[in-house]
Amino acid sequence: MTYPPDGSGGYPPGGYPPGGYPGAYGPGGHPQGPPPPPPRSPWTSPAVLVAIGAGILLVVAGVLAAFLLIPADEESSDEVAASSTTSELPTVTSTVTQSPPTTQTTITTTPSPPTNRPAPPVAGADWQGFVTGPRCNAADDPAVAIGQTSRSRVVICQVGNQTGRWYYKGQAPEGGIELQFPTRVGNTFEARNGAVRYLVSPSSLTIVEGGSVLANEPMLAYWSSPG
Picture: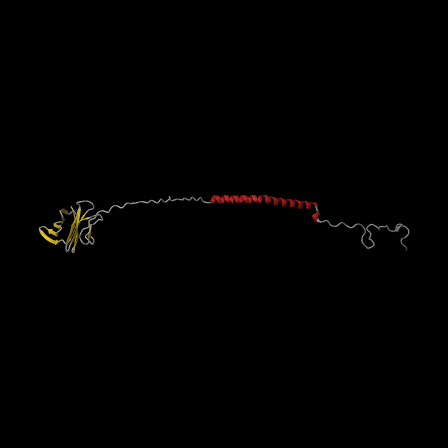
């Protein structure tokens, strides 16, 4: 049998089509025709691109809003904190007392002229009596009579500047005595202690009770102020 066969059912006259039959294989054994398109990426879809653009816009808007709003919030927070701190601070009131300036005052005093004090001519005595006693009580009480015997010492004192107001002070080995309101006749003074009388004169110290003389001591030294 020969190809192409003759008669019906054989290949058409003229042989194979120049480009071969559709869907036929080429010389290398590969199918003939245009290559299939490459697979499309899902990121190139219009819906995906719109969503991405919308997301970018939202991010940009959020960043801008953050820059615009956050400083204002921080400033408001700082102002609130500052006002809160200011309102919480206690009020302190200080009182300052200033001393008045010191003024130096100079006072000049003129000493009073010394009062003339008597100088009794009795050993160990001054104008108030005996230095070791007996002695006038007050600092301004002067002695008006001072006498000393071999065993006794006596002083007649005046109360201040009250002329005629006197008191008697005597001291002996047995002790001391003080009597108020003695009297004076000339240079003789008399002090009383109940029934006992003490007579002080330039010549003696005589102690008398009733009609009896208890002691008669001659004066060794005597002084009296004029009176």
